[in-house]
Structures are given as C-alpha cells and as structure tokens.
Amino acid sequence: MLDIELIRKKPDFVKERLSTRDKELPTLIDQILDLDKKRRTILTELERLRSERNSKSKEIGLLRREGKDTKDIEAQVKALKEKIDQLEEQLREVEEDLRSLMLRVPNLPHESVPIGEDEEDNVEIRRWGEIPKFSFEPKPHWELGERLGILDFEKGSKLSGSRFTVFKGWGARLTRALINFMLDLHRERGYVEISPPHLVKPEILEGTGQLPKFEEDLYKCERDNLYLIPTAEVPLTNLFRNEILKEEDLPIYLTAYTPCYRREAGSHGKDIRGIIRQHQFDKVELVKIVHPENSYEELEKLTEDAERVLKELELPYRVVELCTGDLGFSASKTYDIEVWFPSQGKYREISSCSNCEDFQARRMRTRFKDSSGKNRFVHTLNGSGLAVGRTLAAILENYQKEDGSVEVPKALREYVGTDFIKP
Image (cartoon, rainbow, N blue to C red; front, side, top):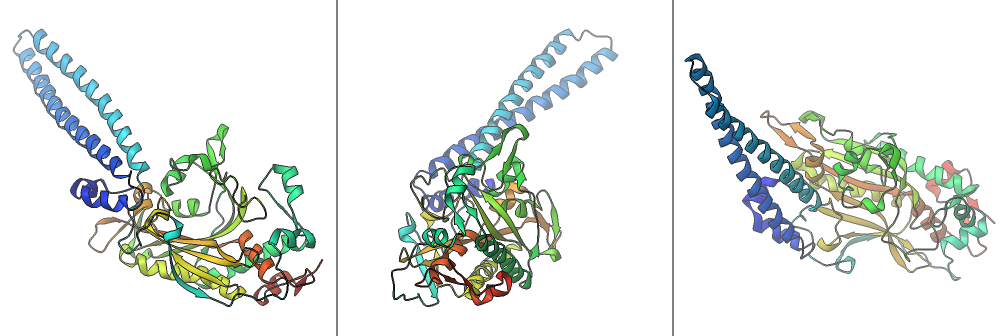
C-alpha cells in the first residue's frame, strides 16, 4: 500500500510513476484524493459537532442545577447526536471506499527500472553458462518424462483434471532431491528454514498484495474462509504482521519449501504441455525483511542466491530486469532469472526476485524501532529459489542423451542416488 501522505504531498510524482505501469492508474489517484478530501471534511465537521454537543451537554447540567427548563437545549443535543450519527456512518463508508481504492493501487516502480509496456521491453542484465549442443534433435521435457516413466500426465488428469501431474519413481525422487538440495544451499547462506501452513486467512493474502487484486487466481476453502497459498512468500512475509521489530533484528532471511496452488486464470492456452504451468507445483521460496537503507543491496544478494542454484546444477541461464509495464503488483524492482530450454530454443522464467520496499509492510503493519526510537516500516523482498518443477524440466532437457536417458547433475547425485535416469 502506498503512503497516503506521499499521495497528498506529491500527487503528480505518484501519477507519473504509476503511469509508467499503466496509463489508466493515475485516475485512481484522483479518486483517492477526492475521497481523502471528503474524509477530512467530514472529520472537521464531526469535530465541530462533537464539540458543540459537549458544550451544550455541560450547559444542560448547569441549567438543571439552577432549576431551569432544559427541553429546548435537550432537543438541540438530540438533533446534534443524529447529525453526528449520520456523519459517522458517512465517514465509515468513505473510509471503506478509500481503503478499497488504496488496496487496488500497485507499488511505484523504482527510478532505476526501465520504462516499457510488456516483457518485450525487459532488459537483459547478464548470461551464465554455455548452451548445450546436441548431435540430435532435443526432445521436450514432457516427452522425455513420459518415456522415462517419471511424469504421468494422464494419471494427474484422471485424479484432478488438467494442469496436474503425477511424479513417479525417479521423478518423485528427483523432486525431493531438488527440494533438499535447494534448502541446504540457502541455509548455508544464512536463511532460516521455515515450514509454514499452506492455508491462510484473507488478511494474510491482503498483506502481501494477492488480495483483492488476484482473487480469481486463488483457491479458496469457502466454509473455513481460508485460502491455499499461491507461494510461500505469503506466510513467510506475514510472520511479522502487526509487529514492531528491533533494529538489531534486521536483516531477517527466511526460506521454505511448500506446494503452491494457482488457478492460472489468465493463462488459458499457455504451456498446455508439460510442467511449466501447473495448478499445483513445488517451490523453494526466499524472503528477506530488511532495513530500508539496505534493501537494494539485499536485492542483488537475493538474486545471486537464486542464481547459485542454477550455477551448482550447471544450467545455463540469463537475468533480465523487468520494465515498468511487466512489474508485479507489489514490486518496486524485479529481476527475472530465466533458464535455457533446448526444445524451445529460448530462456524461460524460473525465478522472480523482487524488492517491494515498504509496500507490503504498510499493508501488514510490520515496523521496526530505529536508533532514535521512531517506528519505521521495514522493506520486504522475495524470490523463488527455485521453482522445483521448472528446474526438473530444465534438467531433463539440458542433460538428455540421444538414447533417451538423462544424466543427473553432479551436484544432485548424492541426493538422488544415481548418475543416470534411464528408460
């Protein structure tokens, strides 16, 4: 959530930054300013009426002690109370509308973020690793997985419908190996491993920005008013909801493995084959709660931590900086890490690493007490470290052999227990 004081004091600046995301967003700021003005007008009138009511109430007491008639002034107090009740109801409605609008406004892009409309305007930062060369036509991961008997799309569909997969045998073992391997790497870098709930309250999703914006992408348990998490970022970041931390507690590094659940409502027709885009998928997440002065330095380190997984697995990748039009709702700045897929001849996203600055912290009321004793909002960061299914798919494609077998990356062999997965 943006700072209402910033919107009041620098409306043109806020509109300019938001317009780099979407030309329609500045109209929301105009609506917010109108409601904020109305709210303050009502508050001023309420303060006047309450003061008048209190004054007249005291006058009634004086008149009664003097034995004088108070009917007229009592009628005035009653009328004032009715006006106050009406205005308080108006205030509740205006504040509800104002909060609803504030929750719909995305974060401001950092000044360093390239301006653009969509992914075509993203900027490549660096590449790592050599793209493998094959003496044969490389197969897609879904074909390799089916031939090896480790991915069963038919059984997944039978159990749950489209975009669900059953991982069998070496497929299940490779998944478990990747999760343990990633968690071990991140623990070495100072992240504390967490195992959070997979069901959360609506306000928890509101805190990190998934609600109300992405309601249609979430799975909800109506009877319990709980949601399945779309990413471990949601429970991890909210661990400090409504808390005031000590400055010396910062930075806080957290990592977690969880299944993630997404309807993928806007992805009809995209990645129908394979395990790139599933309704349920495994992911190891990285979250940082940091001092505002260090958050962009922490973003670079977070991205390096996610990259380290691919380097250890010797998978070629590139890092791109997202342009303003492609930024996620809560992010001020984001780096996407994209791994190479030989069958498609291109890089595909496997991690997004974002600095949300104080956007989520305001929604969650997560603060810290600085050295002067002032309560300030923390900055929050998150990144995939990594999406497990996409990593598995990238391994199958980049390490495939002509006979249909797949070599296991050296860094994983101790975890998996074999050097090759064969038909």
